[in-house]
Length: 130
Image 1 (tube, one colour):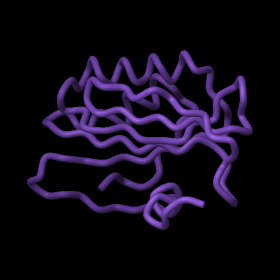
Image 2 (cartoon, one colour):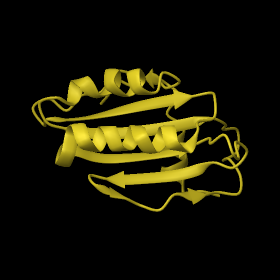
Image 3 (cartoon, helix red, strand yellow):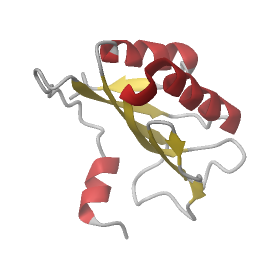
């Protein structure tokens, strides 16, 4: 299985609201119950990179893609660097569906949730960010 920290990160279903006052950084969590076309995820990442630049600190997630919804795809982005996507053999126990965490800094960070959900309305925001 997964290390306990990773398993906990992937199970953020309970709404959490914690904000780093004065830190200028926010983390947002999203879920989706339907598989995505890979190009939609690629375009969403590109749009966030273009809009936030170096302030897009990190994107991590397990994504259900239409071509293989039973095998999650692990994505990891740090600013402008996109790691190669990795297809996993199975979803973690008791978990299905896309889960995405986006960490962003800067003055425009509060705009990220609306931007992402306008671009890919399948995403539902979980919690208020932290």
